[in-house]
Structures are given as C-alpha cells and as structure tokens.
Length: 120
Image 1 (cartoon, rainbow, N blue to C red):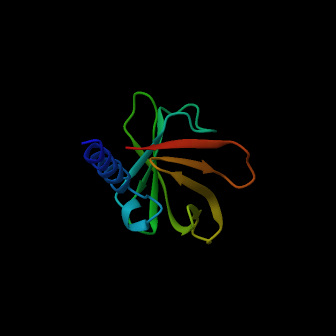
Image 2 (cartoon, rainbow, N blue to C red):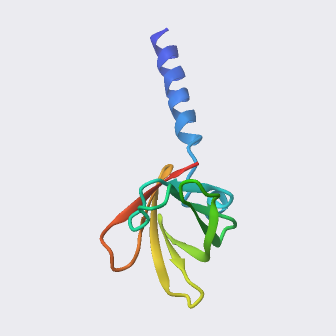
Image 3 (cartoon, one colour):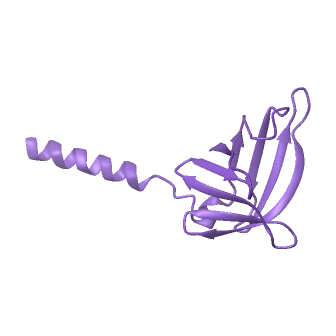
C-alpha cells in the first residue's frame, strides 16, 4: 500500500512538472501577454504590457489611469538560451528579458534597474 501511494505521488509530481510551460520556446511565447504594474521609468502608467504576437515580434502597450490601453512600439526579438534580446528597426538591442516560469525581468542596456512582468 505504501508503495502504491508513493508511486501515485510520484506520478502526480511528474505531471505537475510536465504541465509547466517553458516560455523560452518562441512557439510557446507567441500569443502570450505579460504585464508590469511598476515599470522602471514608467511611474505615471497604470501598467505596461508586452504582447508577443509571433515567434519573432513583440508589441509594447501601456495604460495610463483613466485612459484606454495604447500601442507604444513594435520590435523583433530573438532567444539566446533563456534570455531574449529585443531589437529596434536598426537591429540594435534595446532590451533584454530573462524568463523564469511565468515571470520575466526586463532590463534596458546601460541601466541597472529592471522591471518585472507577470504572464497574463
């Protein structure tokens, strides 16, 4: 009986781990949205939103209190391991994101502050 309970718990634990999405895979990141309510440098905003619209394109949206969400910018991105770089139209890196589960940390080159985004 103890062996059966142990095996059952092991199977449940394995299933829980296997169901975790790995958002460092562009095909799984595509179609997701990530929100930050305390973005560095965006204090006047209610939130900032990253929308990954494809396996290479991310859009940035923002919402100020009392207004509708507005489109800010569109950029391309590319993974390097668990880190992704965001590029402007001149192919310069304008941001770096590291993903850990359903949390991402966004940093801008030259700044030490980062913003934490949560998957929506």
